[in-house]
Length: 494
Image (tube, rainbow, N blue to C red; front, side, top):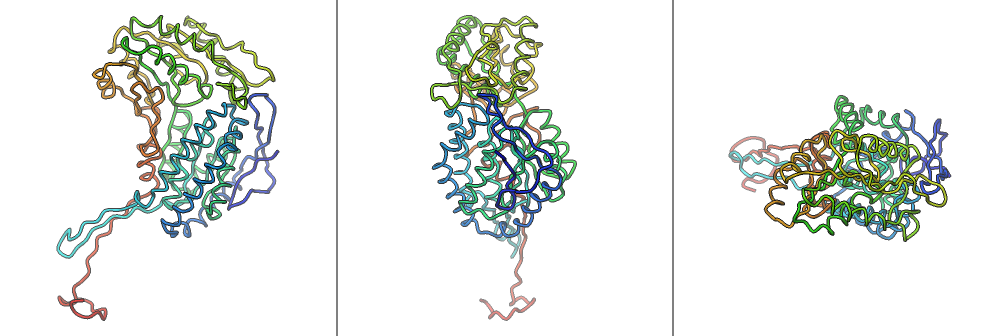
């Protein structure tokens, strides 16, 4: 099967100079080949978006909104088909894929309120006879570079808001699981989106660099690892672009002694091993505050023993494989490093056996992890959960704040005063109070602090509309013919 670009409202049919393999992670088999863009295809996609921009910019808000409403209905009706596509290429279980799509639909629904979000301000008589008002206008062609771990949700963090604001888009999804983006483009076309407003460009660094340096691309939205986020931000801004680049994470979950430990253990397992840990909001480190560490670790390990690992298409599976063989080897090397560094390996997922081949690594649990270990410092992006011990609330808080990432964190406690103190003192962008994965709903915005975000604008929600528009302020005065000035033929005192 061939997966190709979507340019100017149709599938690209040219001859690709390079292609990549797309695997079924549950079997290890190649399920498709995806065309990789060269400079020529980047120029085609950006050119199609640039040609479409004037007409789309001048399309009424009502017409844009009708298309988004129609897309929302099509996406809801076809969500099971899209979930199967995601599972086939990413590996996550279909229930996780369905959850991803549900969160994506939230963002489409928010974008349907574009008419409300794009209202400007007005000041009458700012000076005598002078009115001042502001309007929000689209940027032009914008690029979206999305990761493999949420092949539907992350593109739909950006695309609906971008097109609602009147921009045109070139989307570069991950080459590991590219089909979801093409499916989305086809549904938007069916909903009535004109050709060229959304283009999908597949590939690797060549495609990314093409978007980062093309003079017609006015802004870039990116989600991925911190080193690449920094590269995207520096390259894009040096080429005069507005950039929001969301990077990696190392999320902590603090458990205080008064917490409901059963609730905390359930949360640690679901947040640590959902989507096989391949998500930037996964809990990577549980910080157990004395004296509950031993009891909490035992409860987590017991729940892990009941976690069903298998093919994501099997409704009984609760965790699927990793996305590629190379990624499985990388995550496995971190488990080896954790053992070598002296952490206590409570549950070893390296030897899991699942019928049919594939890129499998079972849920893994370390205890007595310390900040100098690589399993603590590095974003592993796999089903590896570490438990660190802290002697007090203050020690736990300092552990979280000392990290270089600041994406999300959570605290489990029944003490409202401690929770309120934590939400004020912790240095991260998203906080959960007895909520392990505090991803904001669609009408708030998503983003971290420190090395988890480059640029100053978070994704989707109100900040998404801000990112995809620029403000123009108009100062106006209309001469009164009775006071002299140009007479345009209107009756006096009209």
